[in-house]
Length: 247
Ligand SMILES: C[S@@+](CC[C@H](N)C(=O)[O-])C[C@H]1O[C@@H](n2cnc3c(N)ncnc32)[C@H](O)[C@@H]1O
Ligand SMILES: O=C(O)C(=O)C[C@]1(C(=O)O)C=C[C@@H](O)C=C1
Figure 1: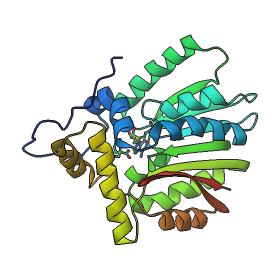
Figure 2 (figure 1 turned 30 degrees about the vertical axis):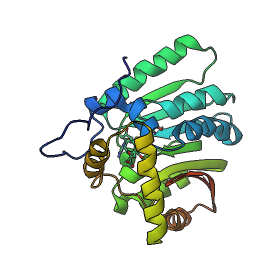
Figure 3 (figure 1 turned 180 degrees about the horizontal axis):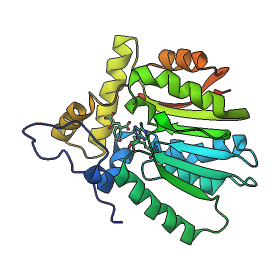
Figure 4 (figure 1 turned 90 degrees about the vertical axis):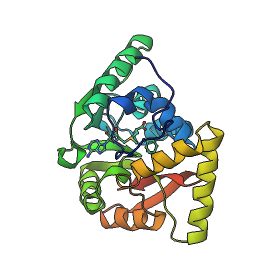
């Protein structure tokens, strides 16, 4: 379970392959996401706090695209509601395997944590159980754009009254000047976290076909079209934001 620094794009690659959540990424993922996503630790910790306000007894909490279970761990630290359990879902077997190890370690450190099940599955073909809280923390941006509405619709159908979806995403901006400013500041954030120009450029070309961010307006419209009644942004740092969507 050794956590390694992210040097995946440090050396020049003849051809940069498309980004995938494989074994190499799993080894460096905690370091990669913290150094790449402005506000990530704040979002994850507060997601636990927010979840505590929506979680209901005898219901399921979903962490969709759970990676190594950072959100699941925050849910388990913050939510103390009777007969709640967490279902963490990811379709990367490398992520799922390591996630189970981390959660096992959390079990041995804390008492009275919510029970958790880690499922290796495609969230697009998941049969959702009635749920009071769904977290999509930087996952929707990796789903094919034409499949996003249907997924959100199914999540909406599964949500209990009084529950919530928490959706965190990288944003693009419809105003070109704003898009460039926040994009440049994100690059400055990566530089300040020790990434070289080469690492930044190669990561960008690895990710540009697999991660397709939407604008805040697109998110809002799509969430409303999926049947959500209200969309409330609760956090933004540069071009990364998190929204609460109410059923
Ligand atoms: C950026 S990571 C999410 C980070 C994580 N939620 C966290 O807060 O640390 C995106 C994750 O979504 C997973 N993923 C992408 N498409 C998926 C799908 N269709 N079904 C399940 N998981 C998916 C990837 O394997 C990856 O682990
Ligand atoms: O936008 C970027 O440059 C990123 O690296 C973002 C991002 C993400 O938002 O999930 C992309 C892939 C990695 O999982 C970590 C961070």
